[in-house]
Length: 99
Image 1 (cartoon, rainbow, N blue to C red):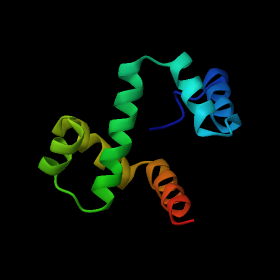
Image 2: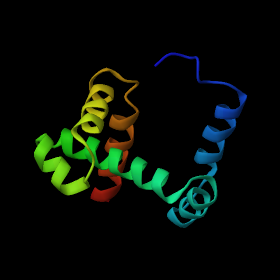
Image 3: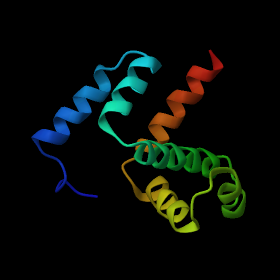
């Protein structure tokens, strides 16, 4: 994706996200910083990434998440050729689930 979108403001946002310590804090921050639709969109994309990693098909993902195949395709593109952010987060979430 390149470095074009990175600047002082996005640095600040990233620092804010890593400063959160609990799920409750994350909910409070998301509620203040994003609309319900933006939060749902991010949640659906993360779920699509998780399902893609588990081998689900596009129709199965559409049925479970309600997102379009175009969005699933974009998520798949970033899973395969992105900065590995999805893989990092999903791996850590899987590790936490096992504990």
